[in-house]
Image 1 (cartoon, rainbow, N blue to C red):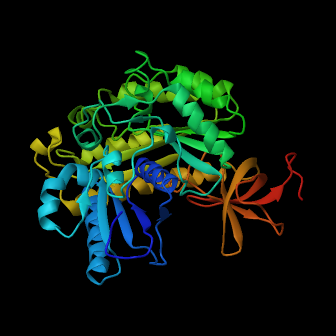
Image 2: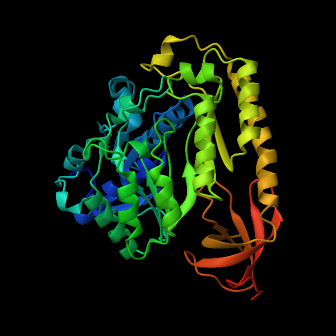
Length: 442
């Protein structure tokens, strides 16, 4: 790439938003490195001269963070610290026209599916033979595996189809090849991600092929944990549960966003499912996979939501006692069908409702963690902080779920699996002593 500097370009990629964006940044890094371009992630040394901001445009807070990050990089450019600022990702895809006029100092804008075009800015070509090759920005022992792009669902609150397009599955063969490549890099845990996991395969195999994909990935030598994120509850393919039960390296963990439990809200959100149907599904999941960890996400403050709807949601949480829960305040997104409704729940009320829901879940989480005291659990060692090792069980995903504090004087290797006897429980974390697989102190 030509620029006003004489030194070789060094590219810093800043990733905002979800794990799917992170994978996109890793793919971009792999393409740049293959063309002998120096690239780093989230570089704090400021020894780079080019920045790519991979933005999120999902909800208002994410959009604000993306815009502020772009402005920060443009300020560095004005001060002569940067030569080029490029912007890609969901915010760019959705609002490029407006943003170009507001921030003309950005050197180029790219949508979510314009990687080859972006590479042209660096005077290199997209290398199709590198499909599945990524420069990992995560710790070496885990990685995300994006099995599809886009979404065909029509949830009234969601702008993802506007930014990511319709659902496109990747082939089982390509995903197995990528998984094998990840293992060669040292990856032991892969987290399957998509806008909607359970839709996988309908476009290319004319059937819901996630169970077949899971069997194929479970056969890849070296993968010790496979984790499922973002499964849609309507028309959930129950065969997934049979595979999860049969294959020991598929975590007993399912991330299934439900969004609400009030039938009036579920209908307004166009979720194509009722509270009663969700209850039947949850019971079936737990019956087929005893001990499974269920994670869900919820939305507070959707247009028309009442206090009765919130009480119904709390009752639902108390009835089904999810292991993990996340919650968002509703964001009124342009060009979604919900945008035609009146955003009639004030922001402070949305926040209060979200807080009151999480207080219910906090109590449930503490009780579930207390039940683990005395158990011996397999834990992957993620990091060392403040002199203590932190890890996760198969029931916890990266960043969003509980951590295990591992008490030991031994030196542990990041990415290794160890056995921990749980001795203490907190609201969202647990603590324990290092033991052998039989539970004996070591």
